[in-house]
Length: 465
Picture 1 (cartoon, helix red, strand yellow):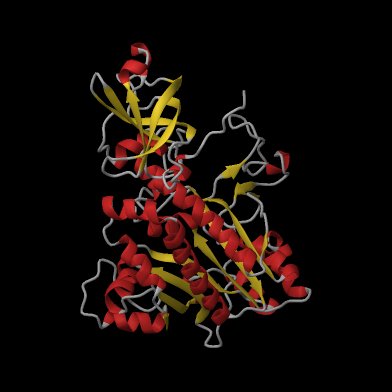
Picture 2 (cartoon, helix red, strand yellow; picture 1 turned 30 degrees about the vertical axis):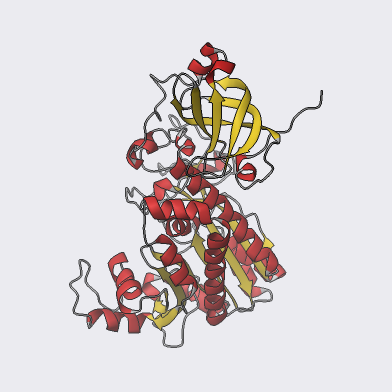
């Protein structure tokens, strides 16, 4: 007997092969009906929509049908027929049903609809079975694929940068330590500090906050590179915008200046918007209907906009003369807060904004200094609802200027000697940026909390799953 291959529900929903025998496998979302006929809504994760299975009750064992409840996993062999019901074009007339796994209605937590997102975070191991998280995870996959496709098509090389590092790329401070030392009895030096020479790597090591510095090294040989991997920050931030473990996309380009960098960032983001609209329309329509009625319109608006480019100084002038009352005061030299960024994007320009030439005091040591001695060639791309979605800069390629800056910031040369070497041996102008992947997914899904766009969020006091 020939083995029948499983059909994905996504393929069957658009099929016109009525009368064909098919095999589907998936999880039961609902079962309803009477003593003569049952209707089972089946979902296998391949698409937001369910496939309706029509079960003529007299043809099946009563005990088998009793076990089919919400959450149960089954295989159905049956005939694909045109649906007369509202909401679907095809359904399956069941001939045979096999139960893979039951789900006790008394204890399965996804019995009813309308669970809060807060509740679903407590059952992150089961929440992918909901419509919302199925949609979010499919979109997350599509965006990851689109990122790799974009850079590959542009001639970039994908670099795997280390997750364990001996350097703090941005001076961000709050890093997770990686160690094999006995936490109860670590080796102690004469001055009372921990002796990390006895540790696995022979020095103190941390989880990385960025792959940027290592990507720069690769760009000095391959010209166009990018990283896409997990990064970590041990900030005690319980906000809808912060995670302790998140993913970053970081291209680095030799021979690019700040203008090339802005052009790439804008083109890249528009490519991702277009890809989502063309390839995730069913999931986007669901999220647009259920969570954010402006979602699809906002994606199209960004795609059709020319990003506004202005200097930090001009942005400060606009904010101070706006007549707005700010929670955080606006003055030259202070970092822009989310309220300032969103005013510029949503109220003043009504389009994405790229701000350049920030005060050097509020930016990282590696950003190229301008001739005014006060500002650097940094750039932030600001989006509606999100605020900063990309941060980048032209990098400082001049060894003397870079050395002066790291001394000003008391960064030990011995910690970045390898980075300085690229400025000693064949230095070149170069630039790059970082895109927070989860912030991108927030924007594209319309979700309000970053914990709902990553499968298993890592936040303060939360690493359960």
